[in-house]
Image 1 (cartoon, rainbow, N blue to C red):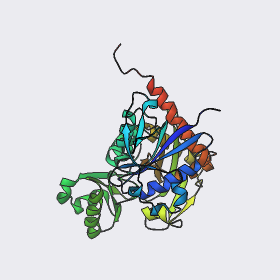
Image 2: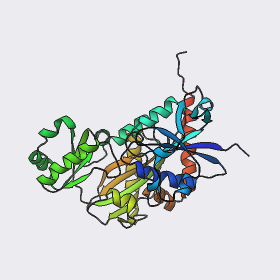
Image 3: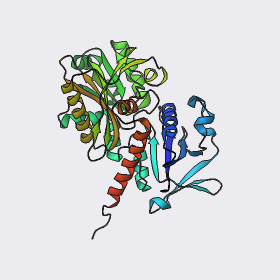
Image 4: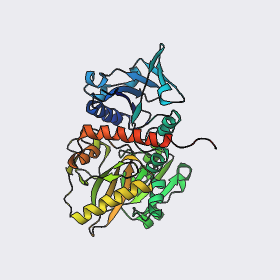
Length: 365
């Protein structure tokens, strides 16, 4: 029997999406094929310190919201090596831990934005999901939309502002350009955190302040009237799209609470009831989006379908939610790839990409 791979499941982090990361990590650990993989639980607290958690962490704490990562005693240090086999995690006192591949489950800032991917690349470790470029371009909503427009992929009209421009953002100018209602979002965050739906000037001012709480840049988008559709993408050089699913929020929009905390926060139509031609258009658009943003591994593309059946791309999530009610694994489930096999395939893709990139020359002949 081949030696089992040690999979470092990296979760927590300094993002506002810390708690969701724990929920996703718990689901992934439980789904890992224990005949093929040994999980190594690496928790990052809100201050950025790394901790080595016991393998039964998610079994002893049934509710991840009771887990305070900071209270885990084993604090880790990273020790780089020239090869993956030489890489070590050092826990005090003098306890080393080895990982063959890392599964980052760090949603949002400092995990999904390319920063962690850069660190793992420096460490010469294979990791699940897009690389530095794909992660960064997928995370920054302004950059993402500009790249998509350049590739003739339709997106909602938008404006972008930096924090130092806050006092000069004109409600009347924005309203005249984008109409009402509209959405205000932090440019670099996910899970609907910091997002406001705006119908008047009071809500506009409040939405500006709320978005700048989480990021130094925000975008303001036109409101798209249409059905909310999500499509999962999987693969490296030849990515494939799942069957699309529809999200039907039971609130004003698909909020943080509806996504992760309230199982009745939204209804799901999986797969979405769409004609074959429209399904094909959605799948093609999702794959085109994935490629345009230089993504590999995985991504969930969120779209809108207008009444005339035109497709508008909203965004991509490069580390989508993996909780029990998350769309990414659900979409692959109904497309013929069960949760456990999906996790295994993602690890295989990480290893394949690392092997491919390891063959590249790093010095002049």
